[in-house]
Amino acid sequence: MSHHARIKRPHLTRTAPNRGWAGIFGSEEPAGNSPAADRIGTGVGLGYRVIEEYIQLGQNAAQAFSAAMPQGWPTPPLGGMPGAGAPFGAAGAGGWASDAGPMFDEFTRNWLQMWQQWLSWYGFPANWAGAEGGNGTGASAAEAPPFEATHQPGAPRSHAGREAATSDLRVRVQLDTSQRTDCAVDLRACSGTPALNELRAPDPDLPRLADCRIDFEAGEWVIRISIPDDQPDAVYSGVIVDEVTALPQGTVWVRIGAAEPHTGAS
Amino acid sequence: MAEPSSVLVASILGEYGAATRKELERVLESGEPRRHLYEPAADYPRRGGRMLRPSICIAATRAFGGRMDEAIHSAVSLELMHNAFLVHDDIEDESDLRRGEPTLHAKHGVPVALNVGDGLLVMGLTPLVENQRRLGPHLSMRVFEEALRMARESVEGQAIELGWREDNALDLVEADYLEMILKKTCWYTILYPLRIGALIGRRDRFELDRLIRFGFFLGAAFQIQDDLLNLIGDADRYGKELAGDLFEGKRTLMMIHALQQSGTADRKIVGEVLGKPREERSEGEVRWLRQWMDASGSIEYGREFAHGLAGAALHEFESAFEAVPDSRDRRFLEALPTWVLERA
Image 1 (cartoon, rainbow over the protein chains, first blue to last red):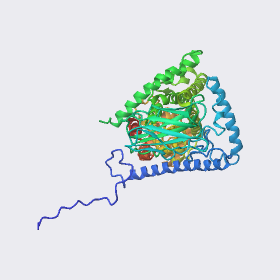
Image 2 (image 1 turned 60 degrees about the vertical axis):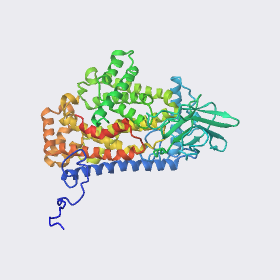
Image 3 (image 1 turned 180 degrees about the vertical axis):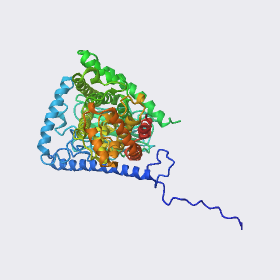
Image 4 (image 1 turned 90 degrees about the horizontal axis):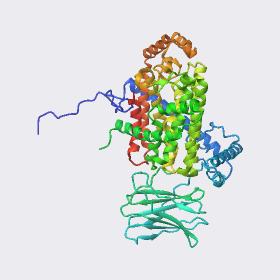
C-alpha cells in the first residue's frame, strides 16, 4: 500500500454551480454570485415578466373572442398574443369581449370586400375570398392526421393505400416506391380541377417529390406519388389546390424511412 | 467546415440583402412626379443599410422549408415599410442624419417628406398583393394579416414613446420600456419577419406564437444595443448623430436607469432639460446628460441588460426552433443574438 498522500481535488471557493447569463458571451467572471450577474438576472426576469404578461393578455383576448364567436367560425388558432386569435390583426385585450360577434362580422365583411376590390384592380380572380365559405382566411389548417397509408420494404412497388375518405370524399393513394414510406392525406374539399403541388421537405436542400398527381377515376380521387430510390429520409408535404381558383383543398404528407414527423406542425 | 457565426451573419446579410435590393429596384420604379416623390422615395433605400429585416424574413422562410423566391415579395414589402417608418420617425424625432446623410425632411422639407413616407408605405403594400401569384390566396392573405398586425403594433409602440416625450415622463421603470420596445421594435424588426418566414415555409402549419419569446428577447437586445451605440458608438459607422437620442429626449433604458439612480436635485435638472423643445436643448445640456448617465452607471447597466436579454434569446431559440432541421439559415438565426451585441 502506498504511503503517498492521496491526490485530492482542490477545494472550490464557490458553493453553488455557475449558472447565469453574465458569462454566456465569454466573461471570465464567475457568473453565479457577482453583482453583474444579479443585475443581469433581474433584467432577464423582468423581460420574462413583460413577455409573459403580454402573452397572457393575448390568451385572455383569444378566449373572449372564442367565446363570443358565432357557431361555425374557426377557433382562434393561436392564443399567445393580443389579437392573435383575431384573423384580421390586433385587437386590444378584452376589446372583443363585449360585442365581438357582430363587430367581427362587420369588420370581416368590409375587409373581404376591400380585398376583393383590390385584387380585381390587380387583375386577380375576385371570387376567391368569398369562396372560403365565409369562415375568413385566417382559419388555421386542421391538425396533421396520423400517417395513414404505409409501405414496407419488400412489398410490391406499386402500392394501393387504404381509403382516407371523409363522408363524401373517396380517396386512394398509390405510392411507387421501394423505400419504407408512410403517407397521410388531409382533404377538406375536392372540386373543380385539383392539382397536387410537388412535395417538399423542411430542409430546402433536399430534392422534392415532383412526380405526383391527383386524378378522379371511377368515383374516387386517386393520388399517385412516385418516389425515387435514392430519395433522402424526411417528411415531405405538398398542397392540393384548385387550379382555377388557386384555393387550397388539402395537404398530402409522405414520410420516408424513419424520419420524424415535425412536431411543430399545428 | 461550418462558417464562424460572425462570418455567416455577414455573408447571409450580404447575400439576401443583395437579392432584396435587386427586387426593390424593380418596385422603386421612376415615374412622375419624379422630383417630389419617386426620387426622394428611392433615397433611403439606396443609402444602404444592413437589410436585416428582409434577411431574417428570407432566412426564416428557408429554414422552415420554403424558397427565397417565395419570400422575396414579403421581404421587399418589409424593407419599403421600414423605410417609410424611418422617414416619418425622422420627422417626429427631428433627426438631422440618417445613414450618414441629411434626413429626408432636412433635404426636402417636412411636407414632401411626409408624403414620401406615405408613398413608401403604399409601395410596400404592392409586393404583398403580388404574393398572391406565388403563394396563392390563402397564404398571401395570412401574410397580409401579419403585416397589418405588425403595422398596428409598431404605431402603438411609437405612440407610447412619443407620449412619454410629450408628457415629459420621468417616473418610468424598465418594464415600461420593455413593453414599449416590444411593440415599437421587436414586432417589425424580428417577430414579423420570423412569423411570415414560418408561415410561408410551413404553409401556415406552424404555431407562430412559439417564436414570440425568442423574437422579443432578440429585438429588445437589438434596441438597447442600438441605444447604446447612439451614446458610445463610432460616429462614422453609426450613421446617425451621436447622442441624438439625448437631443431628442428619448426615454431609453439608460435614461430610465439614470433617473432612478438620481436624487431630487438631478431629477429636477433632467426634467427641465428634457421638457424643452429640441431646438432649445443646448449642446452643453446634452453633454451634461451624457456625463450624468456615466456617473449613474447607466451605460454599463444598459450593456449588462442587453447581454442578459441576448442570452435569454439564445436560450429561447432552442425551444422555438426545435422542430426545424439544421441548415445554414437556421444557424444564421441562432447567431443573431450574439451578432446584435458585436455590431458597432
